[in-house]
Length: 239
Image (cartoon, rainbow, N blue to C red; front, top):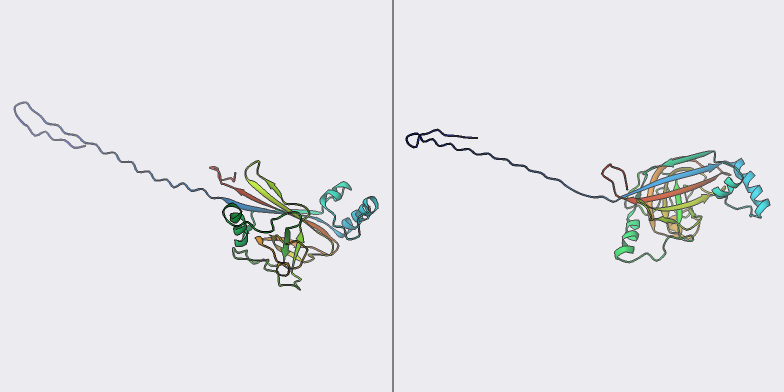
């Protein structure tokens, strides 16, 4: 505020006043789509697997090479000896993004993921996943002993009724496969079991690093991969 009391005439007085108020506000509003993956592994040891397989063969006539799903272990009351769950341990690779965005505004992939087109792969490398990856780091080719891609046990499950939307894959790794250290995982749309993505082809959708320990011969491990698509809420949670 400023003022003056200089006389302008007999008995006259001039008073002046001014006020300034300035408010600057700047807000940035950005919304990010989050893609997060949980990797869930249930394990049954050699004795549990052999016992359950004998009963499944007796009761249902299953072949000796039958991969036992979790529901059959549960039917006989056989609980996994260990269950692990790793959150937010994955990224969608460039081929996966091409597949996702192409289905919206571009060219859709020829072989969509289904009960006969889709595999979860596991490998031994703990090297950080990268956007440009086209297969597991442990995948050394047709004779690889450090990677294995297992066909899904059923069609991928899509959930869009609530947020976040999810896409879930499940593969059962039986007694004779993937018997090594599980340090990484990924998904492609190959159509048959194989030690390598390179030998059978397939879009390598995602890649993650997750230390799961060592699978031994005779054991059954079931891997469940759930990919969530959502937006962070004001509280910081994904909705």
